[in-house]
Amino acid sequence: MRKLILLVVVIATTFSCNNDGSKKVIRILPDSAGPFNKIAIVVDNELWKNTVGETIRSVMTQSIDGLPQPEPMFSLSQIPTPVFTGFAKQSRSILKVEQGESGFKIERDVHARPQKIVTVSGKDITEIKAQINKNADNIIEALKAEEIRYKQKQMSKSLSRNKAVQEALDIKVKFPSYYRVTNTIAKPEDKFNWIKRDIPTGYTNIVFYELPLSAIKKNDSLVSQIIRTRDSIGKKYIPGPADGSYMATEMAYAPHVYETIIDNKPTIEVKGLWDVKNQFMSGPFIMYIIEDKVNDRYVVAEGFAFAPSVSKRNYVFELESIIKSIRVN
Image (cartoon, rainbow, N blue to C red; front, side, top):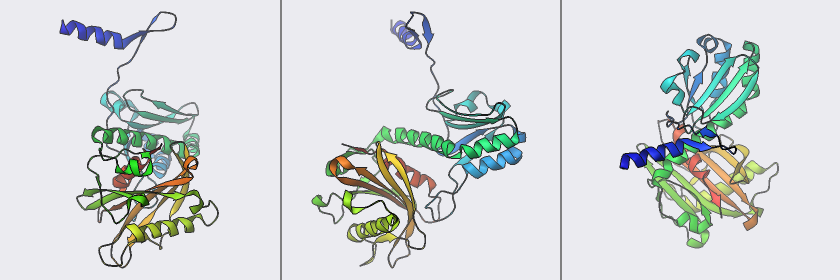
């Protein structure tokens, strides 16, 4: 009886009816696979070895802004087109480059789930390269969004039950249970919260707080305003190991500032380096200033990592994935 019930369930989930009563097949896709931020490049060997390959690598392995040393945005694994079969098709993030009719398209969950496949094509080498360069931002955005979506899904398997951040700022944010809410010198009315994760060579952190909308004006002095604001927060709430030391912005490198969207709200994204005054400590930070007009405030989340002598790309990627899960109530 148990086997019969299972068979009925499988059939019911595999077949359903179209509006006209005919049967349609619902495909059951395998789970996708692959390390975070590793992109499968499906392209013929001949194209990979010539200037098409050079163009792909220049776009996909450009250095990430805000890190203390050059690190590529993605790691690449080339798969020749004839070999793109079987398990290879289960890669989570795929860039296909083909010779044929000129085009660009993005597909989801074609051979596995979750999966994003970006296809770029052109009639010859010159046109293929032009299509890659023309759509570079869209390629990166599509594949990075898939990686973040998957990272958030993986972290959701063991979320922290601590609601201090949510209750203080009236937001929802998902972070793994291996982050702990750290006690600081902040008072409850300050609405300043800090979560921290210990890693083998240091730690990663995210701080959350709010600012009035009047605190930051979007004009030509935006970078100066942001530096002034985050340094004042660091001085007040993020002390260093020695008396009088605190976290501040590394002034030797101007932060990179962008516009983005979180929770359908205009957001300022800032990437740069932090240091501790009078101490030999520094690292990357990524900061998001979310405009919450309904509550006349900015919700600010800043992630920063201290991980000497190791790659920091995936640590910052995790911080970004957590922050981008924010939903303002």
